[in-house]
Figure 1 (cartoon, helix red, strand yellow):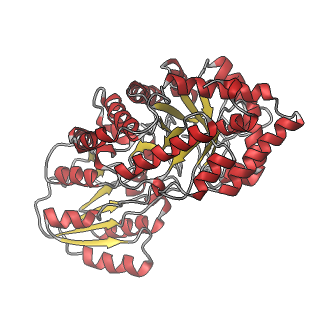
Figure 2 (cartoon, helix red, strand yellow; figure 1 turned 30 degrees about the horizontal axis):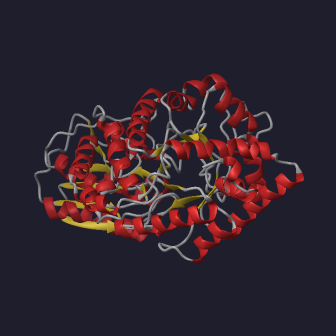
Figure 3 (cartoon, one colour; figure 1 turned 90 degrees about the horizontal axis):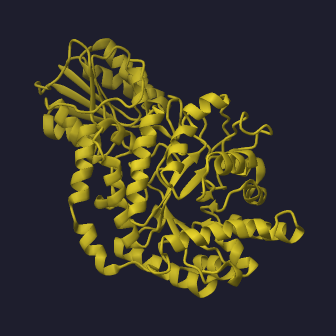
Length: 526
């Protein structure tokens, strides 16, 4: 993999990580690789079939990469754990980061990294766009939430660095995201452009701290955030296109030597404000090495052509291109992409039939369940005259996966504890609220599973109306622990951190009287 052997077009292709719409190697993929020399691929759930089918797809991608570009590809995926898991096989499904923070099991995230890295690499995936190192201390954050390990920088750094170590030990590049920090924002960068206005001292103690520790731990890649940090960039450019943030801060001051990958430049934070062509060129000028363009062929082509035109016009020097390409080729060599070009199909059945990772995930989930009670705890549940209510599971952010949404919480409660169950939409209307309130009047106990109620006021209204008439209510928070703010002075509150079969099992055990081992990884005003 010699830099001097590549054409300008092939060099530019190495700077691109592109997504595609199909689970098959089709004309779209051939066009990206053959005609535009795109050198790296990001997979989403839409691309994932069976484990074997996905491995075969990756083999075809790599063989075509060598044929047309001379260089194997980074094949990336967002396999964070929890809702942001593109591969939904049980042996690769782990609880969300905040559940790991709540469980507090020593060495757990390193073990997660080992399990994840081994299986990803066997499939042919050599880059994981994880872990999230954002310190989530903003209750209004619409996109990070339980993707964060918690609100304490030390704990986020500790758990994240251990995950990085496990993942990279198994030959998969880890990616610390979203630099310089997406935890204290109230805007989703898929939809708008946030700004974080803290001073440098605060940023170094909170937002930057986990990233600094990850750099010191040898993380191989960092992903940028489309967020403005005025104190770090006097011209208020988002980090993705900011030379002061990417080159002066991350490279020179923090000492990062790996590759800098942008978050997807189709996100509205930059798309609506700069457009894909300008963002692609400005990101490279700022110091980024790889531009992520996840979804649209037109945007991918326009970005490649914009970079080429910028080189030809002198706006972007070929020396600058060579700097990033050299860094990318060096990392591909270090992670032995050529020696392990295609997936080892013979290993897949053995690895994915091993139950040890699924048992580990169940242990973490069970020990994450957190119980907060007042002096009049309603546990354990003894009566059968109970009403279980829960919002139906649904996607809550643009980054989540759409496959295999779990069964409803209230169905599981009624099957195991008895009583009556009512599944409600995410945002129940007034008529449904009144109907459920009438049913709750003569019940000994109400068990209410709330899911992302911060953004669904109908759930909050229903909860408060029931509680007004029946004080015997247990709040189950099936997503964001900050939703506890809306349960007022509830005597018994259980935090599950996610709406999954594992977390439902753990919650029902606590309802039945078993201990809850979890500790809240964020501060909440109860």
